[in-house]
Image (cartoon, rainbow, N blue to C red; front, side, top):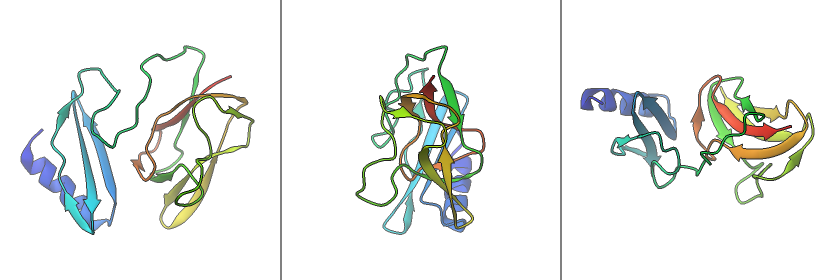
Length: 146
C-alpha cells in the first residue's frame, strides 16, 4: 500500500473525527486509530488468508465457518458498539442463544444510535467486529448459526 494513500486515510480519519479506520485492500490490511485526540498510523500487515490476529487490537475470528451460519451485516456505515455502555457486558458473545429481534450491537451513524437486531433465532458463532470499530455498509457484524 502506498504511503501517500496511508497519509490520505489518516487525513480522512482526522477530518471526520473518526476513532478508527479499518481497510483491507487486496492482501494488505491497515488499521488507523486515534490516540489521545491525535491520529497514529499502524503499519500495514499482510493478510495471508489468516484473519486470526492482524493487529494487537483486532478480534480473533475463528477460521472455521459453518456453511449453515448466516452473516448478520451492518445496514449502514458507522461506529459499532458491542455493549450498551462502557464497562457493561456485551450484548452477545460467541455461544449465546439469540431470538429474532434481540439486540446484537449498536451502530452509531450521524450521531444517531441504531440498535442492530437479530434477523433470526440461533446461536452466535462469531463476533466479526471490535467494539468502537468503524464498519461499512454490508460488513459482517456477527455470524448466527440457526
